[in-house]
Image 1 (cartoon, helix red, strand yellow):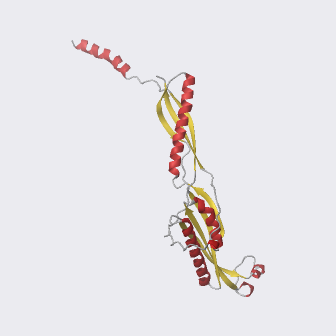
Image 2: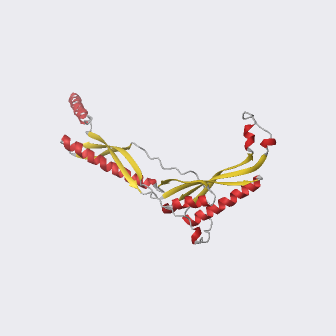
Image 3: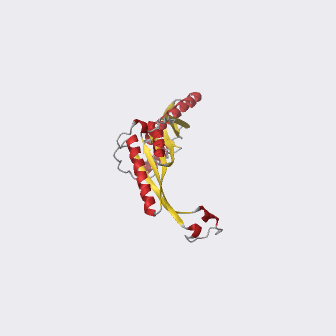
Length: 254
């Protein structure tokens, strides 16, 4: 009886081994999809410099502060309370006669006397504006220059929510990948199955405008007389192109 039981157990071993045999490799195809969307920008960036001059540091600083306050107030009134005006890179330097540069000191330190005596001080500050009033951005540049800003310029446009555009580009890339995969599967004479993996090959880098402190918007100035209204400069920015690329793996076969 014992010998019979051992023989039956030995007969079951091959059957169990056959039941645990690994399945064959899964049949898949991998395709690359590209999606591109174009979105009108909703944010404009302006930059300008402000300067103040005086015979003393305080005088130059006071002139700078007064001019910047006037510029910020006018821009806030034109662009609205949503405009973000930031400042930084404040510089106060001595001013010397031009002859001081011709003394032959070869760049060595010089005493502030004679031709190198200090004749005054110059204060400078860099300012930036971030606004959603796209249509008024060009006008704002001219207004800032009228009020004493130097190097006023419209530096570019961006999206306040670039992730939304990136999501649409990703969806378009996946749809493009499916179209390509269906063409490959049809050509191979096999049905297209479900998505197995999706890999983002390009990554996403948001536009960085800088770590700026939001200042409380100044109260809008009273409406200027018609003769002093800012000169309107129309701008028509091109749409911002957002591109995404994905690699998608599909199963194939029945």
